[in-house]
Figure 1 (tube, helix red, strand yellow):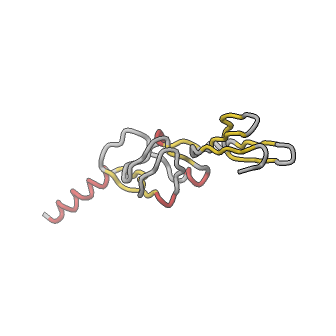
Figure 2: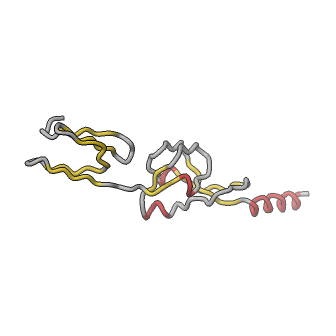
Figure 3: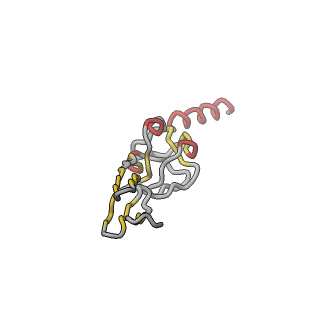
Amino acid sequence: MKNLFIIFIFLLNINASEVLVSKVNINYKSILDANNLYMQNIEKNIRCTTFDKKLLKKSKYQAKRYIIKGTPICYKDVQKVVIDQVKFDFGNIEIQRVGKVISENKDYVKIKNYDGKIIKIYKNGQN
């Protein structure tokens, strides 16, 4: 009986697949942190190709959707972070920021960061 139980446990582990799982909830468009991810064996069928943790060492990735804690992370759930840099020359002031230009008028310039925050930069130097 004991040997049968050991064989049963062994067969369950053979059927399991190793996937990358998050320790915390990951918000939309937040950057993935390797410290918040771990590998886990799951017996369920996973219908996507799982994300590889080694890719986080090469470049930054952000979530394309809200990822719940404990769910497997797939390639379709993440995307590479595209960092656009914007450089402005306001005469004697030169500003370089990370983000995209949303709008510009004679008083200020609106820039959207890659995390979704909007920054307003005035051309006369005020905050």
